[in-house]
Image (cartoon, rainbow, N blue to C red; front, side, top):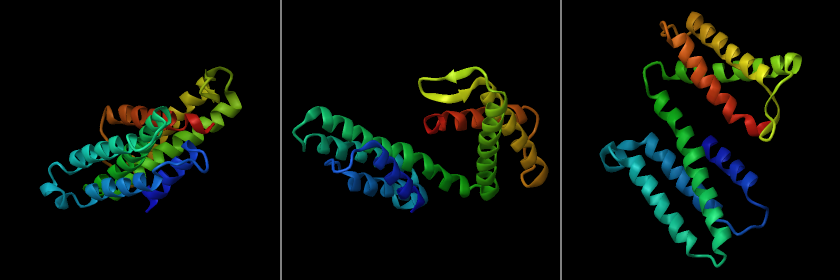
Length: 193
């Protein structure tokens, strides 16, 4: 249900109020897509469920494309509905797969910890020492100093996880994981500033 709520909020950001858009079709397909991660055994023996569901989504959106008269708006609406299904429901559904792994709950907590630590560090370092704008056209408040502070915060989050609840990291993991996850976390928050 959380995934559907996030997907619905995404649609509220993208579409104007009162527009004729198949939002509930997108939510239904997003639920089906998430369900294929949770119960992969129900989708062709677990082997091709997400791929088949993705192809089904594309087919439904193509049908939707030819159901409306204004081709330009319909194309952008269909693309946005499809993006909500794949980007929101698809990506967040990977948390289901992560949870099913050994130490899955700890891995999810770790993921949240390093993103939150990176965001907090980026905010405070950027507010106190930020002088050079990172990418003002996309996010005018983000600075290079804040981005570097965010990566350092993600590194500290990785160290905290290693010494408290998830002692699995070795060698280069301490550098690569904070860089990858912290960097992607910063990219994901650019539009929020």
